[in-house]
Length: 187
Image 1 (cartoon, rainbow, N blue to C red):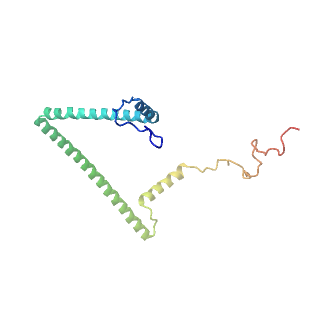
Image 2: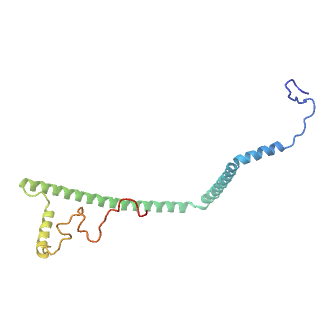
Image 3: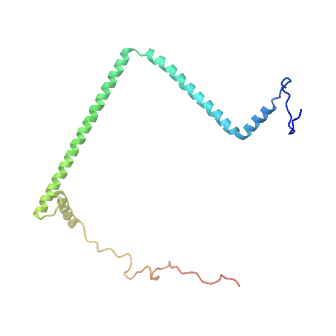
């Protein structure tokens, strides 16, 4: 039967006809040709995720019954006591190091304060404001330098006094000259 606009009208009175699966094959083929790599990577990712979850579930199920049934209360108490002793010992060591550090810092601050007081007093008296240790060190250096070192007048100068790098002469064998102007050889 045909309708007015030329389209076929299906016969709804008769039994449905069996259709083949060729339309399914075409749609699957077109999907895989466009999205095949995405589908492959997705399948691999899902497989790896499932393997990971199975492994975690199996280790959790194996470890929980074994750990609760194999531990007796005496060993748990001994282990906790040993942990407590170890923690106490480490805390005592840390406290001792902290006290030593605190003492060292107090000594350094006291030395700095004493040096500042000495500098202030020496400035009031009109002397140099350097500390006694620096003054003593300088006096010993002067004593040793005057006796052991001799003057260094033996050295000859590296260049003569008339040397000027911008003048272009006095350079010896290394001199630069600009190239010829004009065309290269040929004719």
